[in-house]
Image 1: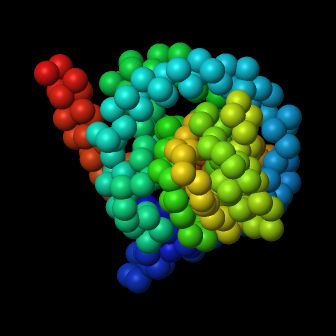
Image 2: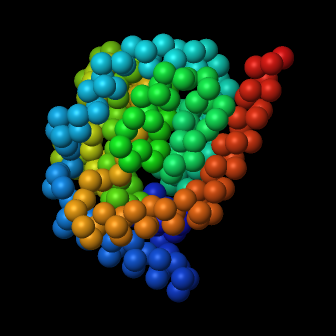
Length: 254
């Protein structure tokens, strides 16, 4: 957390302050796992989260707004250009993003461009992060794990190239294949990797939402996630995203 988590994506803590922060994160992760409402599997049954069906039922509406975004695909930022910490797993232009919100910081401009997607996203309980995640043909994301288990992750398939068996995500010991209009929900703190081993583009709606937990984990998790909102890791990413948006929408006016 706070840009110092080293578990697969960010850097290993070195200073005393960083080590203290990491020890707090490790402790809260243990509490989250112990008091998790739906247990701790790598992959969850989407029926545990009824709101996911509303996304599935409206996937074509979301897809239509994605298509509008993709008309300017070459101008979209690579993930590492917004969040440099992910350079440990991606450094090229083949993983692009279109951000709606990051750790609770909503993009006014991008949400205006995709109002129906935004309306659906705002109905998700505990939503923290959401964006269109776009992988170019051949893109591979090596094994890694997320920084903190206080959130769970949803992918809604929007564009899935053929053969779909060659476009997959492995979470722990399960290999999953996206389907257009279908959601998968998983814990990104399990080791996972992604490969679009096709000649087509893959796009999903990527959502992180607060993991349902019982007391006292729900309180500790709320505190940690809200502290993260003010850390340089989050604020600097928000500044980079805002700078990109200003350029993107200025170009649209020309």
